[in-house]
Image (cartoon, rainbow, N blue to C red; front, side, top):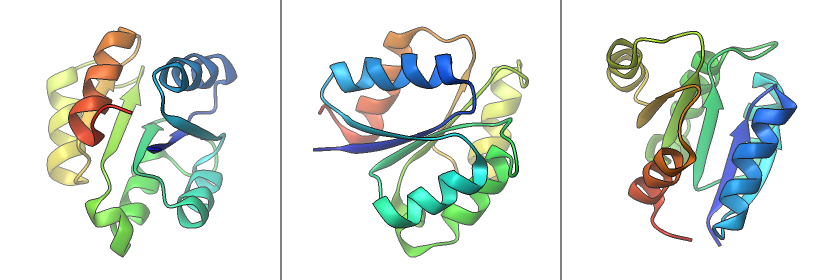
Length: 125
């Protein structure tokens, strides 16, 4: 089963994203802080990470930087989501070119867009 780690400090957003993807057959785990996300990444070796940009203790950008420096992280897709960086093209360019993330979603996003992004990166569950 495809494992997805959702790193999101807002419990409602984490629940919506996680429950939606779980309903489509993905195995979901959650982290509430950037530091917890890095720890769970190392322990669980997910197939994909969905990371909020604004997180306590370590930002999503810091999480991405640390994850992408690992052997598993170099090849694992990572998707950013943000309500702060509203300009999708600028956020996507920074995320993909600067941090080697694979996609950038501006909150609020349509859940079908999220599912399409996940399917494009790791396939259907």
